[in-house]
Image (tube, rainbow, N blue to C red; front, top):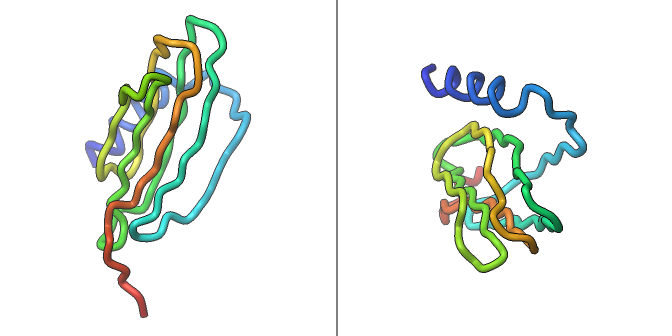
Length: 108
């Protein structure tokens, strides 16, 4: 419950004024990785948003934002809901990665 309270507090603090330009929903199977790219062409810039994932025996989600030089600037592991608020320090192409590190499929 404390995690949900933190999520809502962070949402109100960092995303309250945001107008959603895009909402993406996708499955992430065991061992799978999804990558999105974001071009930052001028500074200052803030990368912000949120994600929600189902965390259970089939999902161990790791989320990374990597800057244009390959340096991870935001990393979250095994957390169901996260508010993202990161200052971009370089112009260029940022990589946003979602990985399901669970390598076992619980199949029926």
